Image (cartoon, rainbow, N blue to C red; front, side, top):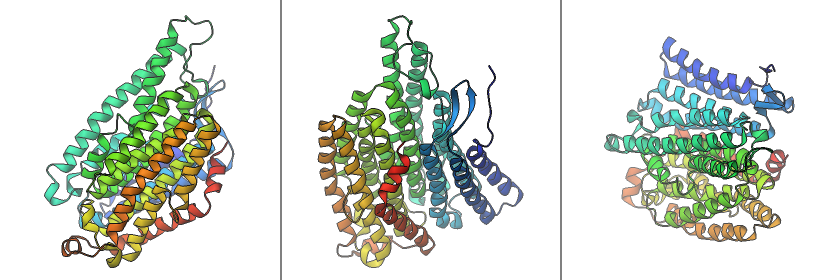
Length: 479
């Protein structure tokens, strides 16, 4: 049986991979920072445009043998690919101050970011487990280096924080990848299925009954391995240390694009494996641990890191309901990614170009020194907490609770609601610090880089627009 190849359906992948090559050529031929930066931005825009062109043609698939395809264009894939491209462009914009100061090597930085975007696009369109796992690793591998780029780290922490964060990230990632690969191997041995369209956690008819436990274990290991990408408990401990040790723009990418890759992987796998109870347990543990530990944080990036752990629990919760919960989980992931990016963008705007996230106390009085940037951070906090005017977050949480109740998971809906109330404490505390009486220490350590102001303001505007029309995105993600 021959395999069909539709090069048009591969246009987003060609654009993303071409971006990495274009950045390399720009670095080798010109060596100019502006040219390299422009090539990366142009490639990210081309990736988003190519995704839109393919999506406009309707559902497509390629690398097919019969009805089983390894590359499938769906509405969810298109939204995810556009988000990966947009996040790549956004992180490049946030990195402008550091690149201008020479704190980061522009060629390596842009190449690694483009390579990670290529992995994200692959995850979005993956139609089988092999493509999915390869895409996740391509998304993650460049981030090990980005986290540990020593020239990008603050001078006083260059010898410890970046390297420690990169090693922590690498070691936990290797373990989780091994677990996911073992799960995929066991699942294939028991069911003979690799393509997502026919993936299942029960042996094929006529197979020995002794294979059923093997398939169940394989499905569980696969879900747990993918749970690392969204920092789900118990594979969550890497996130706070890695986010806090990484450059803030890289932490923004980790908290958004890397997590989005894990969400997409879980969204296409979980409904087909019947692992609802496992996902429900992971969701409750993740949101509860994330919120309780976030209450004790004194560093801003660590607070956002533990907050993102809790948000991962909210995203996992509707997946317990199977296919019925996928649209709600996908919509929540979109809103979370946008709001999280606004939060990190505001941190970059409120700090020095090569500074880390700092202590929460360092932001005292920022609402008076930089009202618009502080307002963007407060808007992000409100959206993540599900409070007005962050209508996107409010809509997303209500949607999740509604889906869980409708599908018979009322107790899980109650856990989501309870944890949302707990989270209010640390979001309100962090927001209140911005408008507390100023302190000389905070004023001396904080500065507003004007070059980032436009990017952060644009991010805040996007968050507001999403909040005004969330139902449109939810409908687009609903099959």
